[in-house]
Each structure stands twice: as C-alpha cells, then as structure tokens.
Length: 428
Image 1: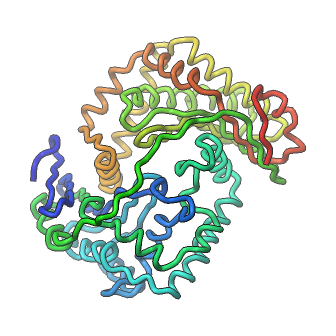
Image 2: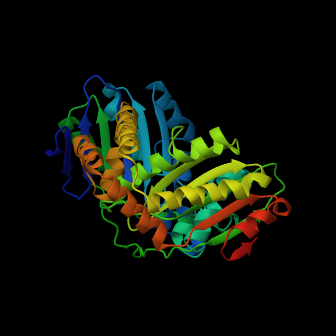
C-alpha cells in the first residue's frame, strides 16, 4: 500500500475498489464500507431510496438472517451501524483488531448479498414512515428541514430530507431497491480501516471479500449546484417556543475559505464563549439554546444559526443575530478573540479524533471529497487564517446572498417577527 501522507495508507484493488488504512497500534478497530451515493443522487420520484436501501441491507442476506447479522457482531463485542447523508452512505463496525476478518465478512455480506424480501420491504416502510413522522413532530428537526427546503428551493435534491417523504417511501418496490443496489460497485464502494491493524492485512482481507466485485454500467445523473434563496418562512405550530433558523449559503468542501468559516462559526455561535451565546443567553436570557453551524457539500454549503426562544422574544433574538453578523462584516475580529477561536478549534479537533471511529469517519469523508490532509496541515491552515480573512469571508457569505429565516412556532404570537424581518413573507 502507498502512503497517502504520514501515518495513512491507500491502495486500489485490480477491480478499482479503494482501500484506506490508518494504523493505530493498541487501539480498537473501526471498519467501514462506504458508498459514493447519497440522497442528492436520487430522482424526485424516489426520494429517500438511498436511506431505505441502507435500512434494508440489515434485514437479511443470502448467508445470514437479520438476527444472525446482529448476533455475530454481538459475539465479537462489536457495534454495527450505518449512516446515509446527502452525498454518501457508510456501513461500519467497531470491534477489536483481532476480529478484522470476521467483521469484514459481515459488512461485505451486507453490501453484496441482501435479499430484499417483499414482506421485509413492506414492514420496513412502516419503520421509515415512523422515522419521518418523528422528525416532523420534532420542531428542532423540522426547522432545519424547512431551512434547507427553502434555502435550496424544494425542487433541488439537496433540499429534500434524507429520509424522503411519506408519499415517495410508500411507493418503493423491490425493483426500485434492486436498481439502486446495482450502484454498489467497485467504483463507488471503498473500504476504510482505522485502528490496531497492519495495512497489508486489511488489503488482503478486502481483496478476499470484494476483489471480484464488478463495475455497474449505469452512471448517476450529474450533480448541479443549487441557487440559494432568502426570505422568511413560517410554519404554524401550536408550541410553547419558536424554533428559529437564520442563515444563508456557505462554502463547499473544496473551498479554501472553509477554514475561515470554521473560525467565524466558532466566534459567532460555536460554543458558550461565542458572541451569540453571551449576548442572547447569558446577558439577556432570551433563549436556552443558541448555536451556529456550517455544512459543506461537494459544490456548495450552508451556514445557519439556530435558537429556541419564547415567541415574544424571537424578534429581539433575530435582530441580535443580524447585528452580530453585520459586525463580522464591518469589523475585523480582535486578535485575542481570533486566537481563542483557533485554540478552541485545535482542541476540539484533536480531542474529537482520539477514538478510532471518529478517525475512520474523517478518513472516509476525505476520500469522498478528495481532501486528504494530515492533521498537521489542517492545523497549519487554521493557524494561517487572519482577521482580514474572516472579515472577507463574512462579506462574501453574508453580502452575497439574502438571509433566509425559517421559523416553526405559533403564528399568532409571531406577527412582530414577521414585521421585523425586512424581506418577502411565505407562510405555510
């Protein structure tokens, strides 16, 4: 295997399947089979099929029942799960290093031999529909979905929920699953292993399990970047709180300004020492929860501030958010505040990557986007960001697009917010 950078190795099987390994002596093993396939790669009429496929592979294979899948991993003392995102899917297991081959045998079975029995499909539809209802009933989840729907225009794949919608999930057939599953091929799948294993051992194990996997002839439709929109969008709910999401488009995974955006996020709303937390919660007591976050995709990104507040306090809280955004646009961040943000991100990054699982996820995401960088380089890029870089980034992000405000809460108590937000109104 070739060294991608110090401490990380990569190789490609003869069939084109990639294998990535980060050895960590005396650490547990986190092993994942990833697919370059996410919810944004779905046609509108099959929204949610990628997530549904992720559910269905656990319902039994030609070699194992659903119970045997979980029983074998439990017998290894391991943990098995999966995740579907907008741009990738990952199946993973955390086990002791001596169980590499046994764990990979189960993972490979999942992505190669699922049965997709009609009775299991119908049963799992009910499970996923309950998951959709649960998300819709949670106002915090719902306000983020509303924000994404309106920011990217409801017709764009990035605007849709990863789980799909009730009307699309209800129509899924076995043929739909088989068509999607056919895309799990040697070009779209890759394997990531982090922990107490040698690279050559992982390579041989993967070659034995997936070395004969073919390449599907079907190509996915090309991804097109969405156009962001602004406005105010209110979904009327009989709630005690107003759940608010304020933001706009951000930057992509490949944009070098993402390091400046990470620092801007830490300064604005990324923790208890952030500007918004101090003003909105500590000084004025307007909200219990106030936090900002950035999301990065292959060709775009988003930035959002979330807060949960009493409806009568929403206009003032939103106005403070706008004031702090305008302050970042207008004034460079003071040197001491920028330095604290850099140390905070450094600590968060290093402490967050103590475990093998977090490192496996980082390595997998880096492979998805082609952004492999050693931690030392990432930290150096953060250290190199200046106050002027952060201010220019704020001017680009917040000056380029109109802000979007999504709110889930009691409309009758939010009329003042509607008047206070100077933009077009759309009510659900």
